[in-house]
Image (tube, rainbow, N blue to C red; front, top):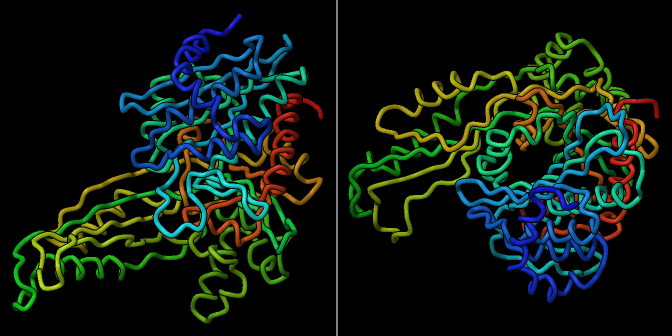
Length: 475
């Protein structure tokens, strides 16, 4: 019998049947064709417009589930954003594990100008699949989908429910996606035992995988819009207090704020886990108690030599950061001083930073006459356990190819919503991609090599199969 929600979804899908039948990639079978078609949907956020892509994924599930074993639902937020939920129940009476949630987001950042291939073409070129979302995160969604359908069609023992979620709005903070789903439909996730999501940090040298980085912790996000307004006028006039001048001086004071280097528990666990995989000097610093690591980093900051032990990007793990990402005072001519100037600030705070105190510091140095609007505050979230059965299964399955280590990221993902509700969430990417291709994330010419994509899909099948079969029991 078709599960409750799925029948309604089937009616909803009727409007896209012609599109799906005619789509060039849909005629093919398998993950490459699925990804090509998935990439052809423009889900740039803003505005998101995830519905057609969500309906496409739902159609693939229904096509491979003729017996109606899955409960498939399209859940729409008050803002009109579509989210896909599909649950495959356990098939043994002694199912012991909490549900495993496979989570990815449908929306993507805007493509921008300058692509050498259509950003929403799903083009196959030079052995790679091109398109916005090829890495972040539609390829992961197809890998999750393939793994779930594999578990369904194999008829294997399932000791835990498997939940597939394709969410909206992640790139803008997730308020209309996972944030809304957990707030309004928590009953669908109350039995969740763990989540697999994006943000795995795999270390690659050339084509060789050095280690799998499983994201277990992340920084906080604080996005601010700051504005100065006042007397504009002709550019030739003497106007040192123009809105643009006042804003630039205020932003400079923000950039001059000092942010002490601090070793948090999350960063210590992540880099101590890497100590055996890296240089002897790296291990000498990080394979120590947290207070010893803090003292050594402080010493190296004073006398130099810090760059010899920090990998690229690591410094953001030890301090709050501020990035001014945009300054906008309109599109007027050069000889007009506008009456309003606006800037955007992207602050990323360590997990234990007091966001209220940080905000007060920024407001203080911005000074009077500068209006501040808070666009997003992600809030703190606890780190996921590296002692859980799920993490140990990841170590066992992935360790056949390369070691596994926890990772802390400077960004923020939808995992934080689950972690704040006590559910361990793990960022895991099954794809091993060289740095040249990985640079396409949020950049131009995003693409994924076909062979890396297919190997990643197979690895995801192995991981999900083990997690669903074992559910905390003996391997």
